[in-house]
Length: 303
Image (cartoon, rainbow, N blue to C red):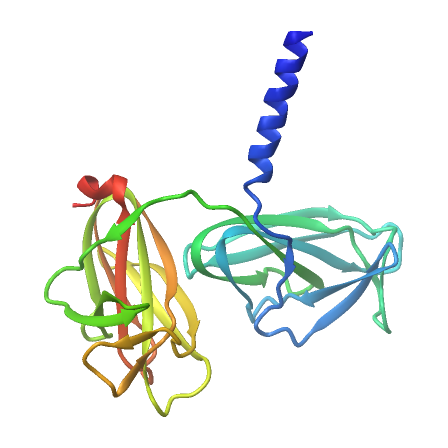
């Protein structure tokens, strides 16, 4: 009896630990270019899907950590025997393309299209992508244009590992800029395409990068900007970020500029020495401010 109670307690503790990893409900994410929306009735309930293209990317932007679920459905002819095989190509933060092949997708008995769409939906096939802390942009393509495929994107936030972070300085020369946020002085470094933010670091560790676009007073609304990360001159990632004017931070010594709200991404630093350079890609944008941090536990390793 005691053994049974102990086993039950262990199972409950394990279940509680698993549940604690999820911090929120799944949210439907619309692609940045969601013009071709398709309504599919699944067991009588309305679900929105978005057409995939072999030429134009469907772009999803989320802030991690979390899990992105992609439910795909091929569009079949009404013939019951029809099947579909297709392949999805996706790129996370401008990195190496990944592929997911779906074979023999058959008709979904409980699903149908709303409206005047010719055909029937196939069974939903899922792809799951685990995303770490910070901003992420994922591009999705359909490899074969001969098959019609729609996708639905659901993002579930998860609880990240608790870490204590400390500032990590870039290589000199870097132009320091002091901001005041919540009555605290915070040091950033100004960088541009001509003078990228450069840092040497030894892994394995994580490099947390906070950036703020520099705004003039005449710049209104949301500002989009792109940053490219190179590792020893090889392109590692490209981040598409978006920000508005900060409501909390101001420059300590410059009243002519307004800092943007911080955007964040994390570089997973593999074992060995690495030289990272971060470049703005937009010719029409101003300079960018950057701040870097590493986990306190990796301080000796980072240097």
